[in-house]
Length: 98
Length: 98
DNA sequence: TAAAGCACTTTGTTTTTCAAAGTTAAATAA
DNA sequence: TTATTTAACTTTGAAAAACAAAGTGCTTTA
Image 1 (cartoon, rainbow over the protein chains, first blue to last red):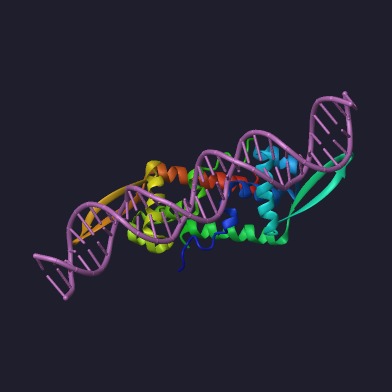
Image 2 (spheres, each protein chain N blue to C red):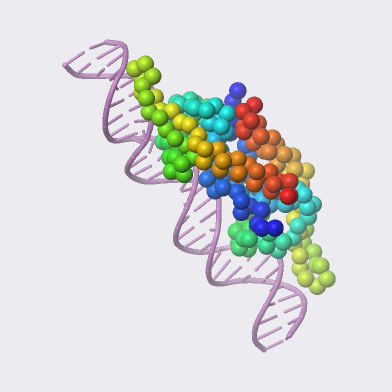
């Protein structure tokens, strides 16, 4: 049996990134502004965490106009979904001592 | 509905402290050296995380001699147990979108 | 023309994490 | 008896991460 924390994904050590993923796994797509309001973050802080998630290819972005307003929408990728689930599995195993 | 990440406990943002709690919730008592080996940490790093957990009163320590060797053993406190469970509940709710 | 909203980027500070080395005390080996 | 080892830290300092605040570019609405 290896190190119990070894299977945890470092990207998900952050509560904010965990929060983003949790929202996106249930909601399919969420806008920058919705995330900002839900998680009560400053733009910069949110943007940088979203960037980390994008770099990892756990998220993809779509920029569009909704009516006349610019809108940035985030989606979870297949990789993101898998990685998040793997992380939750690892967490569960660790907690249950499996 | 409040901020979904608001109910998470900052002390458990750290994978190492999560790991320690996971071990102690199943094992009742674990020595410094066992933790060090299980989690593959340097003494200093482990000691400082244990200290954080102790400050929060999530852990208590017992120093004793086992045979002729000094032994430091860690136990989870009732507060620690409750806080850890509360954190896991918050996590679960967040993930499931409750 | 001015002000406001969106989605950033940049800057700089604060906080956290960590390894490495040093410390203290007891135990065992030479 | 002197030296080494083990346990469990503490201290120091560096690197990484998190964050707020301010600035940017673009568009829209007043």
